[in-house]
Every structure is written in structure tokens, then in C-alpha cells.
Image (cartoon, rainbow, N blue to C red; front, side):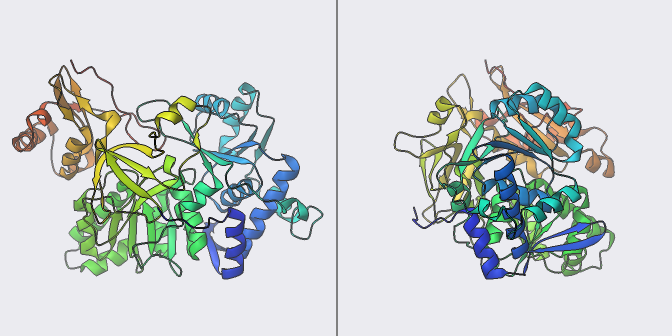
Length: 515
């Protein structure tokens, strides 16, 4: 494991301003106008928010931050992190009931929210006695007043002369809870920053690039990758905002790189294929420019399995799409894309981490590892081996070249009555190449393997498929011919509605007795 100096976030902001100055760091669209904020602007505005928080809230407070990705959200997030307080970000879709439960478990002292959350904010504050302050961060006049009153030249300037302890908890990020209760992952400043200090395996990524930030900022994958890493590297970050505006914003901002999840990558590729189908005389380069703009070189995928066929589709367009792998408990990244490794892999392990496989489980040693789960000492203890390695819960393997392969999750492993171990993910991946399937879940019932499927209605309608079962049955039979005896699908179930999902869009797995 690589040893190195880890700066704090205030140091990154100061260094970014010194090194890149008036170069654009954050770019966004507001009321039809493109707004550019420089490295100097971001540093100045974040430090002003820090002073405001230190005067109004003090330090050591747990501050819930609820909102969509915006420039203001980013400066509040930075401001909390450099003020000696703890940020606890939540999705803007968080319901009142979930908010009451999660805010109570996280011991929230202060709630900062946007206008759309106002009604739920009232419900939550009325039910969670620990919340002493609530602040609406939407009003532009209030925001500008804060920046002016708490500027570098104000009477409050010395409030930001504060050194954050990099080893203390700086953020609590709640996991999605795909198979159990949601847990608050405690990350220090050291965790957040150290995880961005790896050396990229792809020379095209770095200073001079323009990134389009697509994913939700309350996810550590987005904040550390799109914001902290790019702050360090001198990248211009364009904010997409609403996912419905993605196609227009790709053309508007002309990014060179984007971080996505497989669903977004697949959706964009389908647009390209549809365009090519309607216009067969277009070259792959012309298709690429119309859908992805003239500059896009890289898509970095994470969060879920990436079908190699999607990778091949992008290769034909002259765009590198590769995947990495990580988890919030590791500070995020464990492996990152490398165009020289197998597309079946999840990339190459970063140079600041070590990975080993014990009894099939991937285990990690990294300086960015979490401090633990908030107020859950027993759950925290179970996450680490006796010699201090983080247990990922994923099944896989690693090569001598540090290529990492994932085959499933330990907690999802199906154990049949005969003792056979079945990874449902290994079977589910086979359905990724079947266009009639939108969602699939594999589970065992009465010692038999069941495939439950929600069909791709758009595809079926476009291709005149009325009976999806009749279409899928022969494909499942063919799949079974090459499967192990324990992995043979004995029942196919078709559902009418999508599977229930977590806040991050992951399918919540069924728990079924196998015998």
C-alpha cells in the first residue's frame, strides 16, 4: 500500500486557487445563461460559508444537507467540511418518514435544504427533537448576503482560521440498504481526500479536461470523483442538473469525460444506435458527434455490472467506456478504469490500495477506509478481518497485474440443500445481453432456481413482441445447456411492474426460503 501525504480539503481549495486561479472550475446553466465559477470563486465562496456556519452553528454539529446538484450545494458542502462540522447528505427525494428515521439515527443538529424539501423539512423538524436549526439554502439573495457579510475582508474573516482534524469524522454517508437496514458510513477528511490521490492508468484523464457531472452529489462516488479529484487535477466540471436534460447538456457543454452508471451508458448508446438505424449513411464518427458532441473521449462507469457488449458498442464509436469498482466503506474507489485490461474486469486496483481474496471474498487495505458505521459498533466489527482488512462482501479474484474481477455478493449467495453455492449475480449477468429483459432477479425457492423478470416494454413494443414469456423461454433453455447443474433455471416468472429499489436505484433483493 502506497504511503503519501494527504492534504485536507481547505488545503485543496487554497492550492487550487493558487495553481489555477481564474480558470473555470464549475460551469452551469442558469436561466438560459452559462455561468462560470473559477477556482478562486469556489475557494472564496466555500470559505465564506465556513465562516457563516462557524458563527451561526458552531462546530461539531451534524448538518443534514438535502438538495440537487448545484453550484450553491457544492459550496455549502465544502463549507461544512472545512468548518469543523459533519455533513450528512441525503437525496432530495427523501420522504418525511425516511427523513424522520434517518435524521434521528444520525443525530442531526442542523437541517439545510432546498425549496422543494420545505414541507418535508417542517414534518421532520416537528418530529426530530434534536434538530435545533433549519436553513433554506435556496434563496439567491440570502446566499449573496452570506458571501458578502462573511467575505475575506469582513469582521468575521478570522473565523475561517481553523485547522480541521483530518482523522475526525467529516461526513456520514448512508448506504443504500439493498438487503438490510441503511447504515451511516463515517468518513474522515483523510478518507475523502486520500481516495482521490491515486495515479490514473488512463493518460487522457487530468488537467485540461472538461467533465460533465451527471450523478447525484450526495453519493461519495460523485463528490470525490467529480469534485474533489477534479479540484486537485485542474479539470473544469460542468453540472448537468436534472437527468432529463442530459442529452441537451452533452451538446451544450461538450465534455471530454463523464462518470456514469451502466443504465446511463446503455441509454446513451441506444440513442446512438437509433440515430444510426434512422440514418444508415452516417459514419460512426458522425453518430458520435451528434449524440456525444465532438469532444467526448471517456466514460467511467461504476455502481453496478457493466455488460461488455455496451463497452464494445462504445469502442465502435471511438469512445472509451470502462468500469471501476468501489464502495462507500472504502472511501469509494478500489479499482479504476484501464483500457489495457479485460472488459470483463472492473479495472485495475488503485496504487494506494492493496487487495486480496480470502475464501473467495475480496478484502481491501487502504488509507481511505471508513472510521466505521455511526453508532453501530457490532456491524463495524463484522466489516473487518482480525488483521485489519476491510471485508467488501463481494466474491471475486485478482490477477498478478492487479486486474479485479467480481462474480457476486457473499450475502446474496444461495446455498442449496446439497451444499452447492450459487451466485445469483453470475446468472443475472447472462440476461444483460437479452434486449427483451429490463430487470431480472435470481433467487431460490423450494431448492429451485427462479428467474423473475420485468420486461423491456419499449423494446418489445418496437419489435412486435406481445408474449415475452414465449420469447424468453427458448433463450433460458439455451442458457441452461451450458450451466452447472446447480445454476439451472427451473422456473421463469414474468412480472408486470419494476422491482422495488433503493434510493440509489438498486433492486432490493427478495429473501426466500430455499427449502
